[in-house]
Length: 241
Image (cartoon, rainbow, N blue to C red; front, side):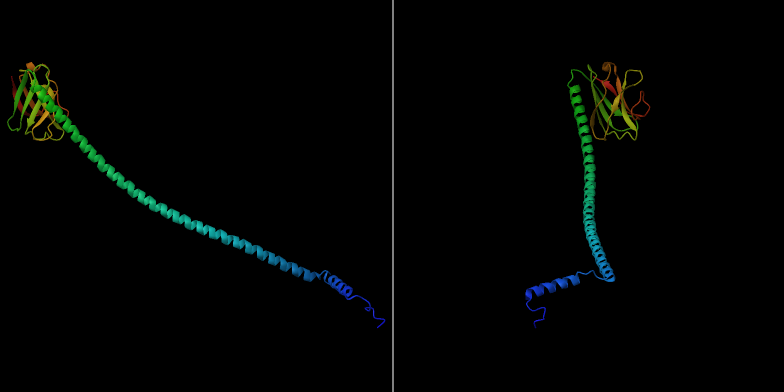
């Protein structure tokens, strides 16, 4: 026992020495083949991890793109519905506006007709109330129908005509009044608005030198009138008063 080298050695010192020897043994570099194998496996693990991260990123990007496409589809569908609704609303508004415009035009025409009728009646009253009034009873010529009366202020020449029973003059035609001075050719005295066969009062141009007029006549002329009678004479009457 005296020759045993371990005799007298502390157990703690023995354990430390064993651990150092074991560490030196494992600290030795591994064989080259083992080292290459371990590095290769590490590289493969790294590549697999990298590919996995890339695939994960692409899956995230794909999910985001799919979500964006779905959201865009929803927005476009909603916008299309809104556009259809707005188009229908605009069409309805356009139709309503067209109808309203038509009614306004009709009312404007009615108002214009009423104003003309009131002005004509006012002129008749002025002429009738004048100190001296010339008048002519207009009778139908052979084959014609209707009657009328023209009133003229002997001083100012302001005139008004009351007509009844005259049929429409025809397409592109108009009734025209003529002032006759003895044997002289008839002079145009104004166009007559005859909207219907009912009695209507209408104004005419001022008659020049009314005291010289001996008769009045009404004929059918082309639209716009004529400078001398070209159509049939439908009414005629001598001046009285």
